[in-house]
Length: 223
Image (cartoon, rainbow, N blue to C red):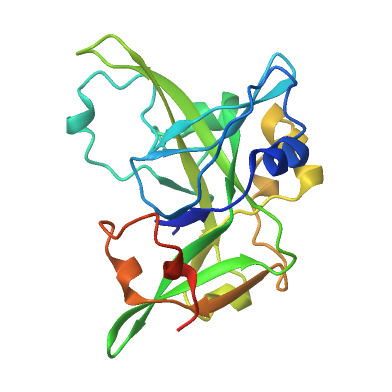
């Protein structure tokens, strides 16, 4: 799974990597070192043939959901690659509403006799990690306001990541962005990243708490 990640990239890096539409307003993106589910994250979607930057709630709320947000108790911040085309919460978005979710790095936990030890994963080349995602728009029945939300697709880990955890995000390469967003690509694209794409190191167990200050840059330092 992927339940926590970071953002240290700039707006220019996003704009160049995803070839965003010129109409997108520049955004002053601040670093975040402990991004948790249900908070607002960055996403890239395709609209009218153009790629658009769109902040969204991390934790997908399907458009057909009729109850309040408080009653959505299912964890929907991750979707399993093996069942994403079948599960009621995700199958409609898989067919029609894909997105790209950028991350500077993400945390994963390894169970040890001393408790859960967090590790921080980043790309070896220092580039942004692009995670395959799905999104949807839901109208809050209490306020009648629309909410856009998203989920990360998670699959089986490669050998490198499996040393720590059996699951990992589906990481897309730049030549896969278009077929994923357009829907031309299907389940066949949801494969583990190559063995040498990522690197990792242990970090402080302070990361274990979702309440830890997300502005604390020391969270990603090796321990």
